[in-house]
Image 1 (cartoon, rainbow, N blue to C red):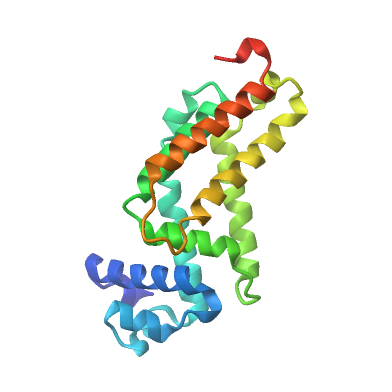
Image 2: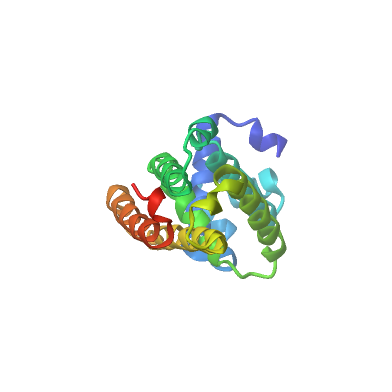
Length: 205
């Protein structure tokens, strides 16, 4: 890793984007170090020299993406939102807007959600647990359930929205373009429907 970190930022990004693109397009098993090397315009030996193995490169990319995505969120701004649905919308906008200029990261993360290679499933399970805790702390508040007609619906609705957001992202995998604005408009419409059906009357705007 020291040799990789010693490279210029431009060279590091070229290699990372090549790896993100290959893994995102083909998945862990089918993506080859040779494909990544060709896309990054370096030798296959250099990839092994920098990361040690295909698995270590994949793990590095997961941590790299996790760090970038978590950095997209303005926690202070989210804390200022007093409503669960508003926080979900605000956090989704932050993530979507931040990833507009990071298409390979979105493609890679979407691919990782579907990854079932036994070589990396343990790592992905740990990462999923960590990101789940981060997301819950970022968005959920104890008082959110009080606005629901049935407080027990709060957690299932939250999970439903997460699955919906992941579905939008999954639709991007392999697509030539992704209309972020259209996705957010559709997401807002669905949130409005859920709010209307699950919230107590006094909390409807």
